[in-house]
Image (cartoon, rainbow, N blue to C red; front, side, top):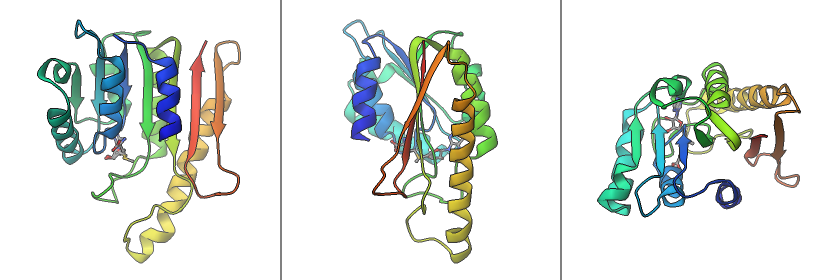
Length: 201
Ligand SMILES: C[S@@+](CC[C@H](N)C(=O)[O-])C[C@H]1O[C@@H](n2cnc3c(N)ncnc32)[C@H](O)[C@@H]1O
């Protein structure tokens, strides 16, 4: 996460609009809020998660970490990220759309991001992004961790890898004149999450 935050810092400017497409417990949402906020209260973070619990956790973290003016700059939605265009203002208005795929840490491990809705969300994100903006994705390719039921131990890694391959295929097909796409993978830790980036030229 340290690496991804460093990259965000290079891309995000004060006053920008950014999207956290998978709020979870709100750590990424808070990091983004701290990067976009300016003295005029202009920066804005749109955070979304399919689970009400995740939105509650994120809201709590923001309430205790930001002052009231900063807190107003974060708008939270309990929706599937494939619907992000419904809550965001317009095309070409967003500097960053970030996805941290998988399940809510400490929550229900059977509610996870899925290839079909992730692909729809990527399509929406692609339209919303401003030139110079980036879509960043943390994709899990190994075991999902935690105390899981036996069946889930076998099923979940397949789901994660399939979703990673969907994201990889989506990025690979973007036209090179308009997009620079890359990924970072640890060679000596093959089960570590893979970071994927799609920069809009
Ligand atoms: C790995 S967690 C995100 C962690 C988070 N970024 C943080 O800093 O704590 C993944 C989140 O994606 C959410 N999620 C799963 N499917 C989703 C969907 N279709 N739309 C939006 N969020 C979804 C899960 O509920 C979970 O909270």
